[in-house]
Image 1 (cartoon, helix red, strand yellow):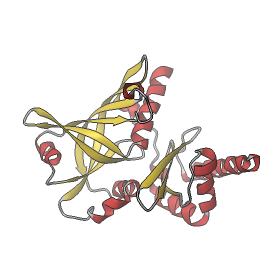
Image 2 (spheres, rainbow, N blue to C red):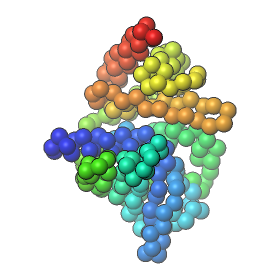
Image 3 (tube, one colour):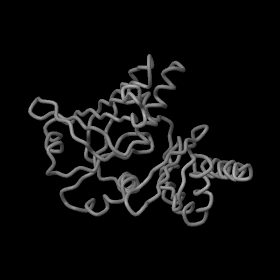
Image 4 (tube, rainbow, N blue to C red):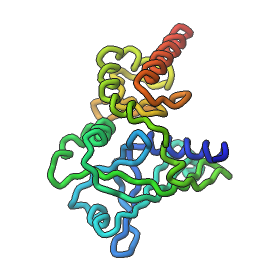
Amino acid sequence: MSDDLLKAASEARRLIRTRGHAALATSHGGWPYVSLVATACDVDASPLLLLSDLATHTKNLAAEPRVSLLFEATAGHADPLAGPRLTLLGRADRVDDARCAARFAARHPGSTVYAGFADFHLYRITIERGHLVAGFGRIAWVEGGNLRFAADASLLAAAEPEIVTHMNADHADAVRLYARNLLGRAGEGWQMTGIDPEGLDLRRQSETDGETARLDFPEPVLTPAAARCILVALAEKARHRSDQI
């Protein structure tokens, strides 16, 4: 894969990992039907959806599992069409996976209220292709095998709950510094909600809503030991910036 396609794939995954909602297109009797859905993703960036059996889009999936998802980060652009967006083509499959369900709940804490209802189920999107528009003249199709993070991160995925719990319980100061000094995010109460090979997810819950942030790693992390090294290094970098303030 060329350097340009590698960059496009990385940017596409980042859109998936940083967005909490997307437009979902399903087939409704042959007609395109678009709805807004909450999203999370697996460690390889495959999107995760928690859907009600009663929703029209879920009924559509029962007849035709092929879907399209639009992720966009156009807020703040004077012209929204100048902002990055990603159109995914894929297939939605219902899954019974506690680890994936936990990742969705971490991204959307409010979902725990209804996640256990009998008519709500988790769906995982198998990515077939992605069409990225990253800016003027920066447009590319990326095949699914290149778009998904392909390296084996199973050890990191298995250790994710322990890593997140440990960081929030024993290193809350480091998490706060990640948010404040590395990402420029204000406020107290930041917590880590997830870690994957390409970065970590943070969340701060306020009285009215939740704020999320993403801290990218300088290089992929595949094991708990490697995760520990990068988390320590990022904490040291954040503390160094505190000394300079």
